[in-house]
Length: 143
Image (cartoon, helix red, strand yellow):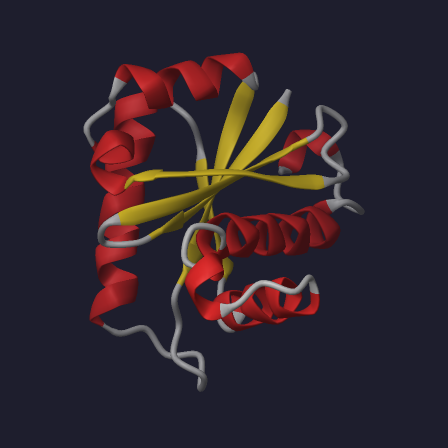
């Protein structure tokens, strides 16, 4: 069973999925946010195809760690996802994940225009790998 990370944006959502052993995050794709929030068949199919048993949602905190309106919006949407899909949802700090994703893409030779379609899924991969690394020492039944 795998874990899926969501980098929820207002228009687009980056997705990443773990391997079944929950050791490695794989950036997956970018989908319109409304497909995730409206229980679109295409998103449900991804959950089924990857045997997702948990969702990890990036929580946008300010640099000093406080929550603002965007973080509250994400928390509300995450509660909605939990009810829609019947999957447990956890949060992980997503501060600087987009900055790191752009750094990685720049190193690979992408320019700003080429990054637009890739940054969100790379950021989702980064936040999922961070979550996987943080939870790898915990017994599987507690995460």
